[in-house]
Length: 343
Image (tube, rainbow, N blue to C red; front, top):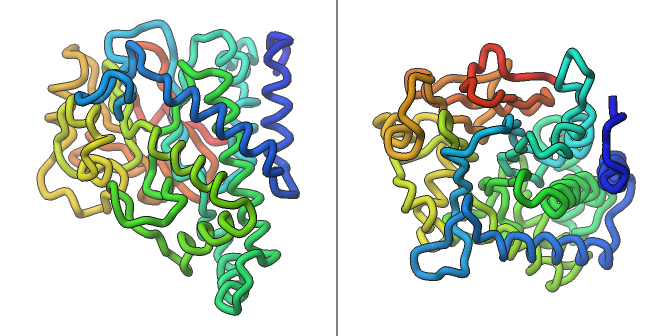
């Protein structure tokens, strides 16, 4: 049900719905306006929940910190990967079985936080054939092929939805940086050029440069640099990937100037962690109470609802074949057996 949405918020949901079924690329004008507005929000996000880096009071740090803050539920959305339908389905989902209240209605009430785990662009295995055909065209000198245009229509529509929500609900919607937030396909700052099926990173960068130009590419790049890399709560921590090392709160805040922390929270493969890292981070960042702590990540694909690592401390929730999300009720802690929902 979507019957409790304030009139001034209905336009937001209408925009999300439009992008969820987009059949053509967003216009340069509309795209630049949206990116610029979202970047402005992120640039000014030095708040009680996002402390600045140690070398400047004006640069927001890499940690979204809600420890000690009560009164809201939390939804964690795994890797998006150009699944443009996911966000509208999530917002329309009836989160309260008794009342039928939707996720968007709960968001409008201010009693819900949404954390995206990043990886907004680059569709995955269900679109492998599209990537292969696009690469054939790309290799022949055509960066703007029909297949690549379809891919970018899906990816940019997904990106636009994240930005719309961030701009509309700046304090309660947050997107963490994933390893795919690398529009320039660079090898620096904790980033590495990406390729999986073909040469996706280069193909996206060349498409964006040719179709939209440097001004928009640079704006997206700035958006990516401003994204936090971790979110903390009393009973759970969240980052795109399993923590490669045990990072302190101060190190995460300073990830903006410490590329090794960005790398360690966005690129970790299964097996890279040789000694358990999550437990020490629970001790140093989370609240000490009787609730079992969990570290929620995406990045590595799972079969089914989730995969456990580090003796159950780390919960991976990214299933590329299923649209799902984690829902943690206020004060309950996270139980992956019961708290992951399919859309």
